[in-house]
Amino acid sequence: MKPPSTPVARQAAHNLRHRSTDSKRLLWMALRGRQLKFRRQHPAGGYVLDFYCHELSLAIEIDGGYHDFTPTKDMQRQRFLEAQGIRFIRVLAEDVVKEREAVVEYIRAQIKLLGVAR
Image 1 (cartoon, rainbow, N blue to C red):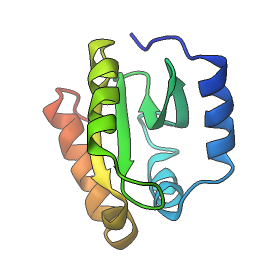
Image 2: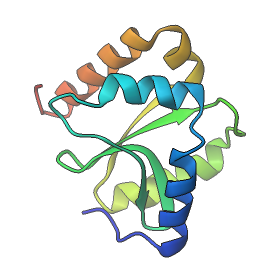
Image 3: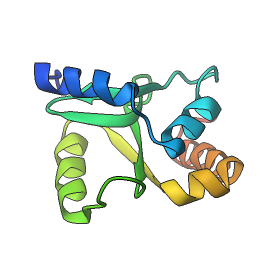
Image 4: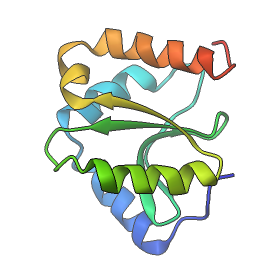
């Protein structure tokens, strides 16, 4: 179960929705309106997930891009949220921009591996 969000995380999510990177906008266009309902810039605990599907307790995170990629910090955050029951799929911002359909296919394949065929 997703941890309750904090007021700071909710405000950060709101702000991030209004200044999305190209990779996040492109992936959002591919994810929205599909059978599985994803939310973008979704607060979870004190964090903000790039994309989150409540039905699957699944986060999709885009690594790289405009912000500094901090693997140690990202993995600490991911471990905390995984302990709350959230599963993760990570993709690179560069891949989303250059090969969006391949990234979407990768996400579909990962969802099937999680045991949810869609």
